[in-house]
Length: 444
Image (cartoon, rainbow, N blue to C red):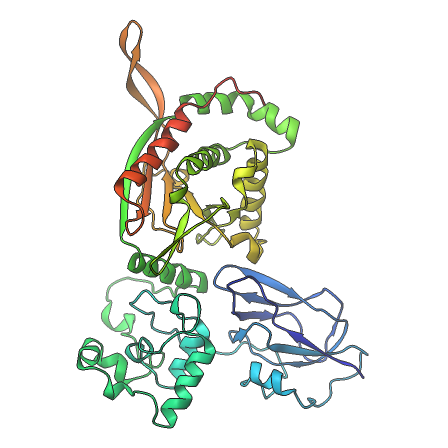
């Protein structure tokens, strides 16, 4: 009998853990190579994990809703196809990776979800695994904020919190009671009880009338946390302008049939808007940056994220990589492929990684304009509104005239730590100018 260990795969550069959503197989089931074994969720996207071996499943080491670090053994398969047997002795490395997985799961029955951890009010991000450990060890949010982090941007890693817990047990770490008075006064409840165990006010006890209580799904919780952290991290400023996109509307109406017939792709407004954004980024590269402490990281790649609605109503931001190297046809292909993948829940983790600037089309839902929240760690996001016909004053050689034009509002939210009003307004104006200068006689 040959036992093969299946490990949690690395799903992206910044992904360190994933949540088990659903097991597709149980102990004793046969499985083929590349057959889907389980569904997992990261803070970016949901994915299917295929089996890397064929045989019979002997162990499933995690329950549904468990948070699993990348590289941990999640299941074992008898590649010879034998019956399930007792668990062999795990290697020290495997035990270190999955200390809570000692007892095999005989069924893939869903476990009760872990209570949601209280989100940090500060700018530092805490992974679900770190929050879970903090809750089990009775570490409140105020105490968690004091733990030095060795991860990216001071992020507390699993090793950091386990070391802290070990030192605290030996009396070497500062307890919540010994924190500075200002910290204790600021969060007395958080320092005296576990973050995940502290009971939240029951909505049913304080809300009366004819109501329905709906629990947030996992992705909505992630979106909420991401938005709160973005506002806490970046001082947001939003600038507005409008653009006459009549030439674009008329050109698209004229060529959308021939374009699809020639290339097999639909031409929407989105790739045209992205093309204008890319050309403007070339003129103002300091809009294509991120912030790391006191350093400004200038991104040489131009990777444009496009906010896309999922069937659930939640939003996700797939990324068009190297958008500055693609023509309008290439952008149209990428926009259509990513939008279709999002609608069918087929996005891969890499599809949402590496964005340097984001555009959101609030006009899709009828909004004239919006004040979008920056997609961290980027420093700017552009919102384009609905295209509406309006009477406008036009200057001609014979004098001013009033004409019906297709007008659209644009709004740019930017991080005022590194993007001043001059740069933000100049970039936004450049995008509007590029849209208005669109060549209505452009060949397909």
